[in-house]
Amino acid sequence: MSDLLVVFLLLTFSCTGSSQETAPPQMVTALVGDDVVLPCLLKPPRDAAQMTVEWGKLDLEPRFVFVRHAGKEHLADQNRAYKGRTSLSEDKLKDGDVSLKLYDARHSDNGRYRCYIPKEVEGHFVELLVGSVSSAGISLSGFDEGSSGVMLDCKSAGWFPEPQLFWLDGEGNVLPAGPPETSRGPDGLYSVSSRVTVEKRHKNNFTCRVQQKDMNQSRETHVHVPDQFFMVHCKNSVPVILAVVLCFILIVAVVVFIWRWRQRKVSTDKQAENKNEEQGHLMGEERSKREEELLRIKIKDEEYLKHNFDVFMKIKEELEELKKQLIVLKEEEEKEFEENDKMFKEVEFKIKTSKKGDVRINAEDYEKLKEFMKQHNNKLEERKTKHEKLELNSDQLINKVRGEVEMMEEKKPE
Image (cartoon, rainbow, N blue to C red; front, side):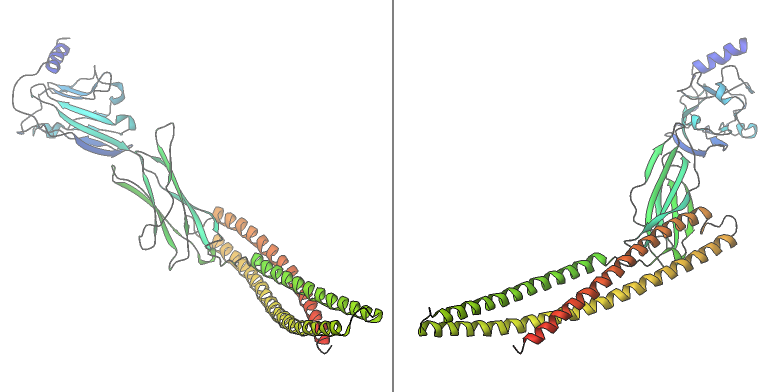
């Protein structure tokens, strides 16, 4: 009982004496589960083996982390969270080193500690930061058909404090990616994730780096994306071709309508003229003017017929060229089907022969690739069907234009 009273008095009152180190709070970092030393040195150095030493944390109740008096450790007022987890080095005490060793560091240990010796004027403060790190995982997310790129996901959970995430290429350059998504769980630990679209490069090596600056900790995961994953997608030219064909059809329809309308107009005028001549309603002078007018109309019709003939010939040539382009697109789609099938077989072979832990490609990514490629092939099949219909429509339109051209050729002598 007397010993406890002495300890209480020593910890409550301060006596004058040599000064203790009074530098600003020193930052010490550790990872969960590590053993860490909180430094505290007497200046000038002297034997502290028989001194009373108190290590405390002001936000605790009780606040004592470690107490030593008369060469013995006192456990009566020690906080239960630190029982069996703290000690001083007996060998270093004689040199004035009263640093506290903390075992099995935990997140709850974070905070400011005070090293206090009652004989000294001031205490020494240490800021402890206990952090957590975790590895990152990369997985295949999908394909970007617009750029023929591959989308990669990177996720990492179990970090403290909050980390940062970066994507790097094979040369160490930072890749442009959207801001990472960060969340904090009930345990106070952070999770971070990010997605990036990568395009085919020299080596196709990519890195996901997660780092924490305060802890000076980082974790990296590397992935190699096979060349086969970067598909050369055919541009969907169906809408453009359809627009061109519809434009041609509209032009043909307008030209044919106007040409036939003018033919009917001339025929109607001639019939009216014959009727007027039979009835004798027209005088000689009026008949002469009417004949001149009909002659002018005839000349204009011949010019217009020649112009329409040239337009139809040009449309016919352009439609035939369009048909050739459709044939080329059809061949390219058939080739892409063959390349996809070849890629499947190569990737499947790599899956079967890859060693455990190989991060280049795994079974889950293969299944994703298989599903995306299935969807892509379905789209190719749809485009192929549209192209075949378009080719058939082009043939019909070409035949129609050819018939109009032949009819105009017959009309030319008339």
